[in-house]
Structure formats: structure tokens, C-alpha cells
Length: 198
Image 1 (spheres, helix red, strand yellow):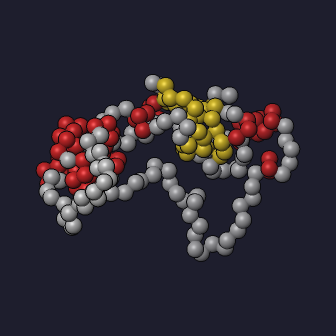
Image 2 (tube, helix red, strand yellow):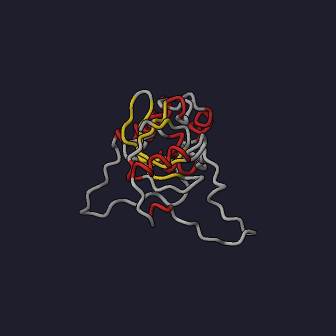
Image 3 (spheres, one colour):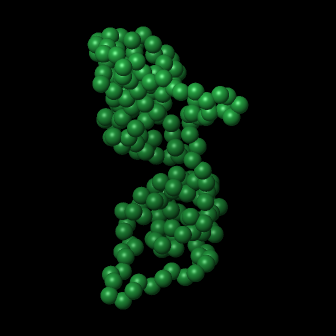
């Protein structure tokens, strides 16, 4: 956990955030050790007083503090780690540079039924797809596919293929709470554990 960022947030929001963090993050071992020392005064210059004639910022917004306390394990993490290996995105220094050919659908007019058939023929288990979440249900979320992220390049945004990511395959970002609460309708997702609907 990032102690300095946590300390800054506690200094800004005050003791009400500290009590919310203690109640919300009591099961998190990282916060058990940090919350005892996080209430120390901030190092560095004291916060500036607002200039006369200006309204003071409202710092007692309880909704923001509740959000911070619930998502603290993500907000104060030292680094973000992706579950998807980034090997396809990294260009090795010892390789010669080359251009990536765009999908043929951009140059040739292929009927949508043929494009749909080619997609379902070429997609394999473990292929990475990229899509936008269209709805979230208690059993998982539905998404409309935009393109393939690995394997054969396909532009599938106009085919409106819907995929389901069941709750059991949604990666958990913390040891408590609903894993679907980290996603919203409209989010763009990259992954592979999807079941194709149409």
C-alpha cells in the first residue's frame, strides 16, 4: 500500500475517513498495519488557507469518503498489475520493425454474414477479444465485441456479436465485495473467458 497517498487522503478528508477505512478494510492485512500509523501528521508544508472572499472547499463529502473506503485496496495499491500478459504489445529490441497489416475487412467489401461466419470459424479458445460492456447482471456481464486482440486481425464492430462473461470468470480485485462492482456499462474490456451469444 502507498503510505504517502493514504496519509494525504486522510489529511484531506479527516478522521471520518479514518473511521470508515477501519470499519471497511478490517479484513485486509495491508490496512491493519497501515491504519495504525496513517493518522500521523503530514510531512511537508502545512495546507494553505483559502484566500479571503473565496468559498472554502467542502471536504466533508461522505459519499466520496464511502467510495474511498470501499475501494481503498485498489486506490492505494503500489502498482497496478494486469491479468493479461503484455507480450503481444511489446516490440523486442532485437527484432526488425514491421508494419501490422490491418484487417482485410477495411479494404474489401465482405458481406456481414460471411464476416460473421469467418469470425466464428477463426475464433479459438484463449483468443483475446476486446468489447464494450452492454449490461451487467447478477450472473455476469454482457458485452458487444469490437475487435480481436490476438490471433487473426478481425474488425467485428459492425457485426454486433454479443458475448457473456460469467461471474465465475470475472477476476476478483479484492478479497471482499462483489467482483462485478468494479465494472460499469460502457467500460471497454479485454480478455478471453467469454461465451459468444450471437
